[in-house]
Image 1 (spheres, rainbow, N blue to C red):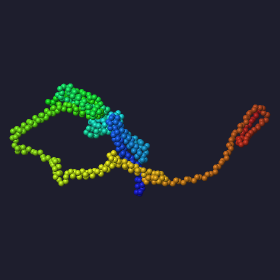
Image 2: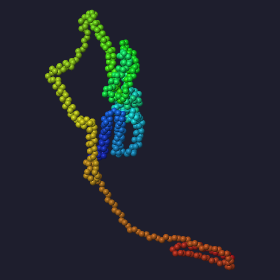
Image 3: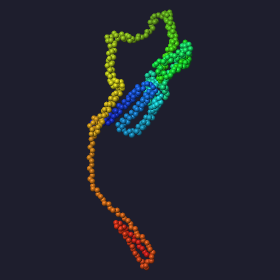
Image 4: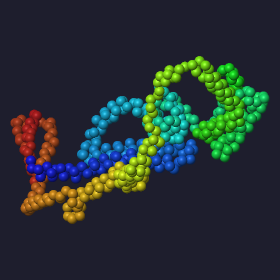
Length: 481
């Protein structure tokens, strides 16, 4: 088979299918990037943290997820049409495959339904602090992303965890609509002369703490003070009895931990001397122990130990040179250390400067990822290449250089008309009507005949003009004597 023929077939396939399929593949890579861009833009526009903003961010994520699925479906249908696959014929196997996939992906369908109800019922949104109780473990963190299939949270340690929506059987939302700061703090009973004094000083410290302008804007109600919620006996000798005081206040969602820290700090400052009294007694105990050890070292038994025995005590291994020694060694070299470090940094900057420039150029100043820019450039290039395959028609000279050459076909000459023959007029023959004549009524009279018998034959024939008749029947009348 000639190579030219194979090349021509390859070119025709690329022009007819290859360019279009390449465009579809590039668009498929760009679809999720566009979706992430839309979600990021929606997140920047709703930074107020209100319940409506959280709901909008969740709905935007769900709509983008559905739009991506529809876009991929449209790409598959367009590719099948371009390849000449009959969609009606593919409906039956597609139904079988979809049924099998649906049966095998029941868990995914359950996750999608769970995400639908989470978003529509507004159980939680992006920015809420939630806690999931599953069959195996408990997960707690800040919601950073939501889709119809899964919820992504970030724990307090910075770990990112993806929880399928079907697994979120029980969820605790700590930042829905409003929250409550609750502080349970023990106070030594010996701190005041009476419980009334302890309660008054603790409440005053809490009220002073929430007067801070940075904290007051987050309050949603007044302080609830509950004294002596518990009395704890000393757990060791020398420790005082303590009473637990509970302080509660309604705050903005997600701000309860900030208010709790401020309340604890204010109460600790109020009872700082009483909390630190036990620490000072521990310090005195340490001084007594040190004094006893010093007295032991001054005894005659310890002094009687010979120096040779003390010299046999193993010494710790030599420590490596300190950073100060290394710095002194660097100063003694011919080339100063600062100059060497400066040269190394300049070389590293020269090596990294060129890639940074290229990355900055491709990312459009950090607006998009470099790979996205490359995909867009490839899409434009393939689109321009596809425009070269357009044809302007048979008689037009504006076709692209990749357009298929028009096939010149000669129309067949019209067949000669058959000769016309003169019309032959056939005269109409008059219709001949044949009728049967009516026979005359014959009667048989009764009379007396003469003695001799007389035989008579009567034959009547009636022949009208242009009428053909048959001979009449002959009746012989015999008179009766």
